[in-house]
Image (cartoon, rainbow, N blue to C red):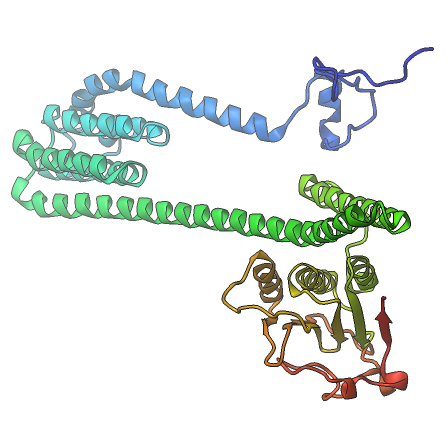
Amino acid sequence: MKSTLPKTGARGVGPPATPPRRALSRGRTPVGRCPHRAWLDTVCGVEATARIWSRTALSAVRTVLAWAGVAVLPLLWALAPVVATSGGGVGVMGWWLPERYLVPLLIVALPAALLRRRPLTGLGLMLLGATMTSATVHAGDHGYHSILFNVQFLAVDAALGVVAANRSRRVSGLAAVVVLVTQLLVPFVNGKVEGADQAPLSVLTVVTAWMVGNSMRTRRDHAAALRAHAAAEAVTAERLRIARELHDMVAHSIGVIAIQAGVGARVIDTQPAQARAALATIEATSRDTLAELRRTLGALRRGAGEAASLDPTPGLADLDRLVAAAADAGVRVELRRYGDRPVPPEVGLAAFRIVQEGLTNVVRHAGVDACRVTVSCADEVTVEVIDDGRGGSVGGEGHGLIGMRERALALGGDFRAGPRPESGFRVTARLPVRTPIDGDRPSGGAQPADDDRPAGGDQPTDGDRPVGGDQLGAVVRP
């Protein structure tokens, strides 16, 4: 019989190592591609991705222009004195003719194309060009040389700011010293620029350019540090959320399994029926826990574009399952429900996990065979778990109490846990319902009075238990 298994990769598992390329049919637009590029894909047989093309093309153009400009610098250095002399006889104001500035300024401007990739190299070539131009061009009057000097070295100072914004403070500081010393010495070499008059302006422009660039680098580093800190906090919060979810999910089931395994081991010879019941409980609890683990791991592995799982999230409607599991572990649970207001899924999940962890603590630590769980749904969801067991110390919080507190605080609620004055332990959580729905407040006797709902650390007594229509649900498992 011909095998119907899909082809696998080199290790025999997963998709093929080299997926076949899908032929493009004329007139059809592949999914995810721009319609007006379909004809280009059909003719060329390649995917025309605008982003990749623009990046590679612009990078290539910048590289070619930058090094082409550097290559013609020697020619421009040779032409600079000739061009500067060409307008020498055009009157007293002949120094302002544009053609006399073109070549000297190109000598300084062309290396600026290197500032993006190699800022130090670009700054060095710009400084060298400005220095050689000022040292070799002697034609013209003082006005021509002053303007040429100021414009060229202002461009050099701007390049210094780029270096300060992209290099360390030590490197950019050394570059600033070199630029400043050069600007202070060039006027004395040229002879037609007043060095004493230019010195204050040179110091001011160099210091300003360095400070602006250094400020930009510091701000960028600070923003990067904030982003890294936020990413680390997000990872930590996600790890805590996963740990809390796994703890609440597994601890309860493991506690039930451990108790049932102990019961089965003790009565396997004398009461085989009870031992079989314990094994059945262990099997059912294990299957439920495995299903929840798979659902959680599937949610963690799901990508950003994948659809969410259709499995329902545990909520207040699943509390009976917790009551039954606790009863199987030997603890009778009295479940009281007040109100039928719909709550958001995250609030229902938090309430479910708090009840689950509270019952787990009763089963594992209280040493009693009965407890009471009260859930009230009104403007806020109030959850209370009370037992008459050994109590405990407030300072000895474990992962369970910490997880319950984190769940309540994450929703803007309140959490309290501690021993009761008479005996036992009380866990109380208040979870606000942030999205009120009009008309969902129970009417008549469905809404318990203020003295019927557990508030703060007050324990409802048997006299507080509503009767008739006020009690929407009460489940007692033997």
